[in-house]
Image 1 (tube, rainbow, N blue to C red):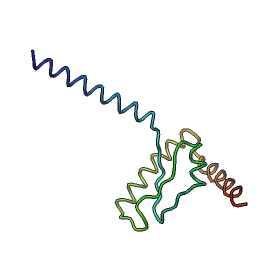
Image 2: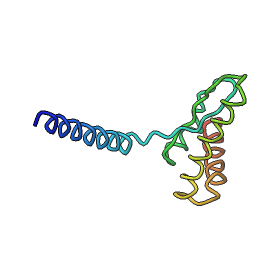
Image 3: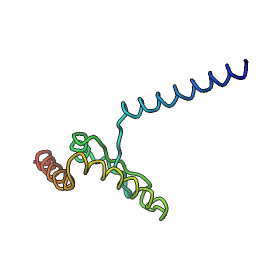
Image 4: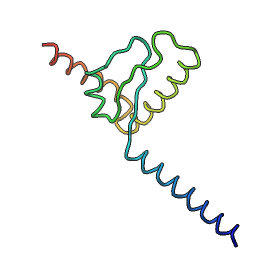
Length: 108
């Protein structure tokens, strides 16, 4: 009987943990486009990116390994696919135009 009770408690704990992770992932919705190179705050890009549901972040510094570069490319491709489904395959063209508009307004 103790074995069955223990199994049942563990089963419930696992199910609860999985549900909590899913809820946290849905609430967080924190997508990041990774950029290598010199650190930059990408303020204007992040103003527009917020409308698209993601942000830019510098990662890895100026010199990155091939493995890290490939991992960053893979993560960015996943985000690109998600954004393409949501905003259309040419979302980046519209995004860049909006960033250019913000740059012109802030710099003038």
